[in-house]
Length: 281
Ligand SMILES: [Mn+2]
View 1 (tube, rainbow, N blue to C red):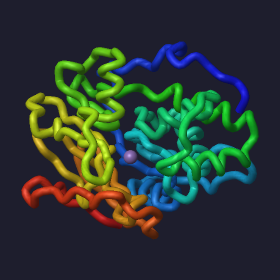
View 2 (cartoon, protein in one colour):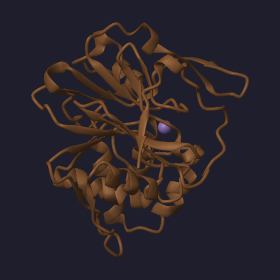
View 3 (cartoon, protein in one colour):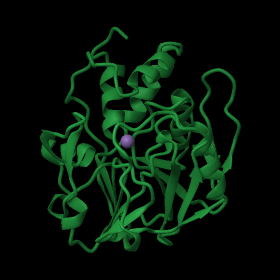
View 4 (cartoon, protein in one colour):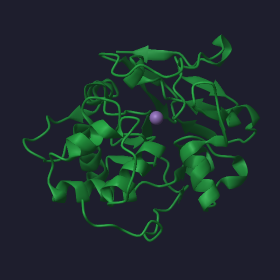
């Protein structure tokens, strides 16, 4: 990957999609868990084609025209990162999925664009898989990530989808600070005793009317606090891959087939009153 691109050059996709009412199926952090993704899509009623041979893109569609929104962090740590990219690329290209950008996607973007990045936190596995693909494929993967919005504000303003979080006053705005919050959440720069960034729980302070669906912070169950719903249930850490439907707000989960990675800190356990119960297949 010899070429290098300007960091701030490309215009980002629009974040204000309030004219798009869905319906949507919003899927949490996948991190290369391809088998669980396919199983969750089928549970949600999608027809999922088998991946074509070689580097061909995947395809999936819902008979009622529903669309997926990926909440970001498609790759890293899990076993089938390129296959997740192939399916996401195919679905986004055919209009059956939208995606917002996660912190792992952003780092993968910088890697694919030829910028120097440290190959850790599971990006080492994704990079090793990508080394076996063609430059054409890697360019297409880069375009997928460049097409991911910082966040998506949808359905007349009633739904916000973002990777790590967003404050209400940021809705509809874009800046470096807003993108940082959207991708990394409320981080102060402090680290905990494990060397992990301390994350503020912005959802506790959220008072807005819009429902915010986000991922990034792995939890044992889907948690809803002040209309902020975390759907990252830590699939790659052996727990489950989850989705929430919009506007119905049904939670669907499929269990992880394996514990692909040991979490450096235990998954957050929501208070019982904050759990949105999942329907399992
Ligand atoms: Mn993640």
